[in-house]
Image (tube, rainbow, N blue to C red; front, side):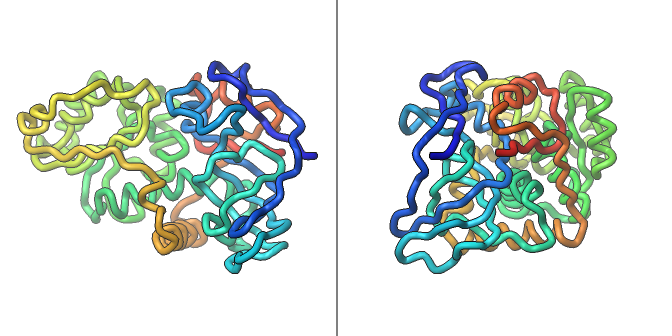
Length: 323
């Protein structure tokens, strides 16, 4: 037997139960890993509450982790027992041991510990595709990053500064503003009520070519208003709730804008893309350009407390759960 957090119905943090489950066995093209650390992400909340539909019930949520391969099934060639690995993507992470498609695993460089590995994969790969592919950030670009003191936000602030961009970080408190500035944000805006006027002031009226918005419903309108003509809005999260239906005519009226709702799954669907994204991520972490900040740790058995803190916006940087 092994242990996992399972939910039997959607709801608040209290629906997560710490339970005994049978030890899984890897089938063909699968690997069994023993987790050393599991990442906490807002998408876990979406699956717990039912905003994202569970594939089955009971459900083990969690989409990111790091650990050691303990067994492999037939046809697996990219990893072997004893390998230190990390992943982001397939659901089922809130467990001491789990089976996962082996082609979703990447070997963790020796210089990166398990906690960092678990904290960096989903958020770091998200930052990579947003900054390097969804919109290719160039030196001199002013960009708006919402939730700039969150897990993805702090990585984006550092990475974008490394690329030569001017980051305007949007945060919910003065404390988080200081954190965002310490991690590369050139400017910070507390709240979004004055965001458009601040962006106008900072850019001399030119506005920005891209806005990265993980907040959703509450900030969608102001985010569009921060864009220069032909600008791109990347709406990649719903922390305040899903964006309601949009009249596409608004994109024409505000300057022939582009709007995308990207997901990591699409950007890493091909093995070659996964390897490219993680290579880029491991390089900037290894060279010190991006420091992964694990600012909170909880026992995996206390995942409910971690969710409560995350939803109350009481966390900064990354949070990991330790089995």
